[in-house]
Image (cartoon, rainbow, N blue to C red; front, side):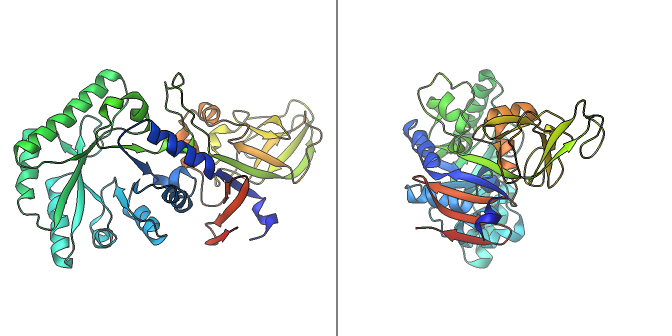
Length: 388
């Protein structure tokens, strides 16, 4: 892994800002902060992020699937790792051996986990997922559903129902209130049938700042850790620092005459003689193809340059006609730094989380602390270098 290779396409990640955001989250609640590291920690690299959080005292993590949990365990991450999606049967034995906390969305899920635990002489901790109106995953908040769970729970010597949770749709306050009440309903129904659960949780990053009265046992914080400030929180006195900058380099600069077409398609025909810079990144690295034909901009030498033509899988072109000093080897900021998360999300007609989580394994991750590079990882070559 050479310095020249590092400077092709890479992502700079500021671990100090990550930890500052984690400390901010903790300051906003009396409950446990569970750090959500799904989708490769929103593009940041789950292992190194988890290690930094663990070094700062975090003992509670959450992921989307068992494989994400295995990755963290293999890297030496201790404490709780909650798998928030359903775990396929083939992965259950290893998940339980690794001490992952699993999600169950039906009585049948509980019975399956019990059977595998009995066969393998294992014990499992499980959180019940309730469907409170988001209609994505979970048990219904009805007496019938509670009865089925209670009936199954009578025969679970190896499976412990350790938690109950749901997820807010965040459409409006009225619906959020309804979802909270639904979660309380199923909690009460389960208690009436002999299942008392102490660990009950509902809030994500937005719920953390919007609904402090619903924090209960824990809040599940993902986006806020990475600098995605919860919507409608601008008036609140806390910082939320963007944690990464996606960068690439200029591969070539060339002059193109008016009337010519740049790249694939003919959506954008040059109306003037232009200077075009080709960059070493494309949608295969995580730059949205939707930002083709002038919808997106990059930052080069402190100035904006519009995307010209269609973004390719491995390369993209920008118009630097008005930036005459641009040359091969110059650095272009694609996201973060001079291009804010929210700005790109608006251009791409999506949300900030997607702009981060689509960053692929190809860009190298460069981790900074106290103004110095501390770790460089290359997922393609499975290489990692630590620096004193």
